[in-house]
Length: 143
Image 1 (cartoon, helix red, strand yellow):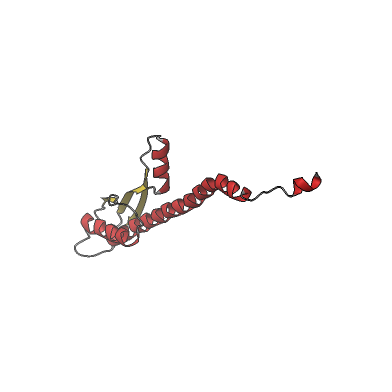
Image 2 (cartoon, rainbow, N blue to C red):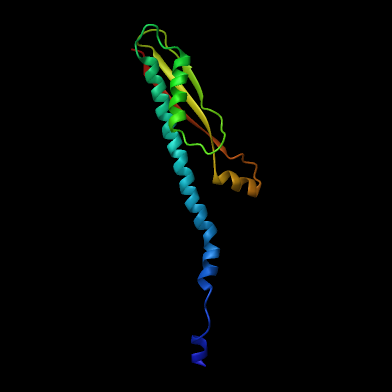
């Protein structure tokens, strides 16, 4: 009798275990990738707002106008921002200073669209649209 129990066929057991654990494993893996992209885009927005503020504080005659600052931000974002879908361009607001020593504020907002979690929210039907607004603000003193 002992011999019969030992020879019991267990082939396919690991396949069943992998089938049970694989959704959680893939969710974790793609979640790490997704949030890596999100944090990278947040860093790009921070650098873009900094580049726009640098373009605006430099002393020149005439002083840079807000359109020049917005162009600098959009150029930086178009070169470095990671987006796998047709999302809106970053929204840039500039609060210019008048004279040397005044503060210049550049605020950049970007609607980040999730890749994996947007599909999961649609699957479960909880009404989340799968986007989050990333913002960055830089304040610098005019030269």
